[in-house]
Picture (tube, rainbow, N blue to C red):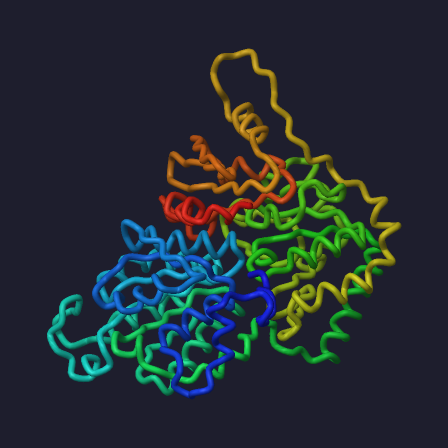
Length: 477
């Protein structure tokens, strides 16, 4: 996700500036420590459902000057809203639930965020540390003393978990899971006992911002991989295309990619899940490669290239038209968030965030030759049909004419009937049809964002996630 601005005294709220005035080592509550960390990451809204195990923390949220509480009708919708918030705001989405009944209701949304690589904090208010030890027969338990059952369930759908046991280790545990959330682009789980919400701890750690940068890479390995990639481009004599996929969005390399395309001039295409990672108004953008059901001119261009640079690939069934890619491994270089793959060779630790800018400098000399490579024209064409029956061939291009710059387009999935919603700054429109398979062929305006759940595919996800739009008017500005 996008890197937040560096934490400084000049661009944060009075609440954060006050942190620097604390001198006592026990001068902030655990709850306020967590809220301050979230504010540092750019979080402005929190979604969820109140429950008696999270009410004490909610009092702190209500008093917080920079984070607004957004109550939802149920925990599943709240988790969907947090998912949507994280995708559009390029920060952490937060869903707050209560112990047991609340967190289990949210787990489908959390699993979807894990599948789709979305950084969501699954924050749960739980019984006190004393009750965790004595195990009384409390409401929302299974009645058999297993207070860790829900935490064990969460382990299957979150990257890391923290169950706060005491105030001394609370800052370490909070920072650990939040760092995992922003660096791995996956959900994390944090259990906050009722008696630790108001426990006092030192605020000193808050002076050090969380590190969301990729791990330091071995410069010698990175240099060797760079040389090898450049060699493949040279052997291809510049006959190369760039194929952009979902992980380019999830791991925040959109800016690096757009600079790469502008400086090198190579033709660029996207997959359905990578759509809008690249500005579709760029002259070198040729449309969406969708395996066997791609437009013929796109299919021919991608599959005939001597070299395909695949950025952030996520080769799911629905993203590849049932695994119908026709691109030999021998002609493929893949850039991932934590490794690079050249043909069959894998180089761990060479991630695309740091690699792409260096590759740009090495390949910009190809611009003159790459600019001569033809790129299919990707434009919207509305056919003039002579029938009163509305066909898909007419409907989807016509819908495309309603899109405006900076729109957020959300596509929903179901078995037989699917909906598409377009979020403008002030209005919400809904359409019926088959958007996940129709929208790839529709050119989208500059600055627009396409959001879909093509891998997890939970019916109703788009409705809940749009709560993040209606609750945060600035989200689409």
